[in-house]
Length: 382
Image (cartoon, rainbow, N blue to C red; front, side, top):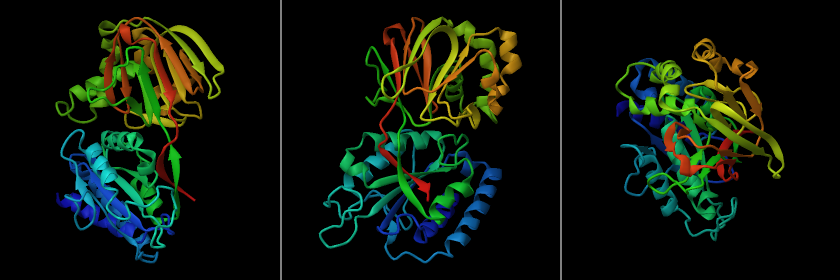
């Protein structure tokens, strides 16, 4: 807990000098996972602490804001806006509580961003800062995505890379992510990727299948599934371990049958039409994205990557290329841009959404994987 409080007090002080949306009062909440690798792995924590101290030194050169302060659910607030998570699902509940409470300040004001309230004071700008890995980030974004527009419009998110896997963070480098607090920045709307099934399947809690980094089906989803299942039982980078094991086991557990894939652009025009035995099919919220702790599955501006089935020997020979992004030069790779994919098949297959996996059955086909509307505000530099 001491590391969390050290971290949160530094971030809170940075926020007090932040140049984020200077025309509006700033309120922040820090949602931190105490079990995240950035806190529990000493070598990472030492690097993060150096980055924090450097960012704090730079932030103190900015004037202190008189309109900035911590926020949080009414029953959990503390001196610097830290709310530690206690288990799966808690980060989403924290955000729901923040949204429902309207952060207590000026909750009755009109929802339009930048409105001036009845007292002639600008509406507060609420910043949710995540300090964890991809799971924490996903829960927070799902809660914001599902919120009513009038509540969501006053919130933005900043995702700090404090986990073991930080593919969903605003930067894999903590210093660069903190720059968005230290230097002038503004909110920019972003979206994600949604999976819909013919059967109407959802998560057990009723939430839709959403990803805000990469959504994929096939071999990589199997790696995600096994990594999650064995988490805590294997030391070190278990994702890398399961990449190696999956190359040997995947074909024996899941039949790699033919999939029919049709891709469409934002206007509904067909941009791809194929039928192949595919090892995986991945769609990102945009191009230039990674998963599995910086494996560059989408290394350029294209947001769709498909890989054809290949021999075991070939899999073992080329699996390292996915780390560097050189897999896109392989003859087995199919790259493209699409706003929607319609995928039909018959064999059970796993899907993963930002590190959370689900098994899809025959009745779930055809699948629709599509970009969502841009509704969530994140920080971007100016």
